[in-house]
Amino acid sequence: MAIPKPLNETQRRFQELCKLGGGTKGGPARTKVQEILGWAGASLNTFAHKEIGSMLAAFSDRNPWHVCFAVGLCWGRLAKFEPEFVGAAINLLENWNAADLKFARTFHYERGPEPIEQSLAGGNKMFDSVVLPEQLPDDLEKYRRVQERWLGRILGKDRPKYIGSWNATAMFMVALFSNKVLADKLVTPIVMLPPGGPIYNGLSILHQTHVLSTKPAGSELDDQAFEPGAIYENNALFVEILRGKSDWNLLDVHSGLYMLGTRLAESDGWF
Image 1: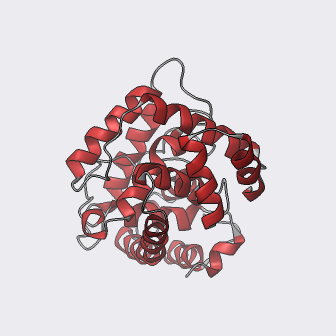
Image 2: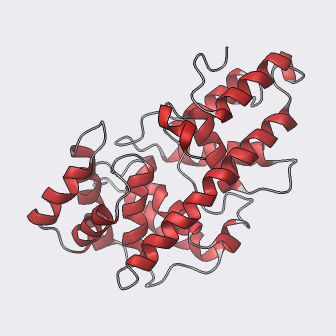
């Protein structure tokens, strides 16, 4: 079985497709897989657009990049999605201090408070050394140029700890969700999306069932290691999944893969 113990409706529907076959080497039919991923991704993204919209509104007087970085930690399940955490995280990204750090650490999940502290410490160093525009870009080409500047700093020998593949790219994904019209236009990998964690698992499942002919690069763990090649290779796989279906975008693909690859039982109640 592709997924021994399906945890949510996306995984259950995928499992049924695997039983029906009809695809390459007896795997699930590609078009049917696209339909499931498109449905799951669009459903999850409805909440993503609302979540970042609410946080940018709540912290409209703060640096929007800091807001997006903080929300990215929540979406990566490093911290609980709460306005109080986002506020403390923004403070730390602007000005490192013991009081906000102590408070932010209390919002941890099963991996404990250390990933929160290290991610925010790395983010603080990144924002100190990379100049970003005051406002979020209004077109994808501008996003590309800003992300290249950000990734260029990470490729240096003194890359901050925990600015791995998720923390290197999640901020830009979150920022794109703040502009649905722009997000809908993301059909080429002009902006890189996070490649690890549940996304890596989802890609692996699609490879095991012959929907994808190429294995995903990198690994599931993405909090410390940084493999820039894996970011680009796996984003190319997102495009391969997208191909042939016109009514979705790479954020839909990405979120659909998340639902396919997650191991969180609570994902069954997300939508």
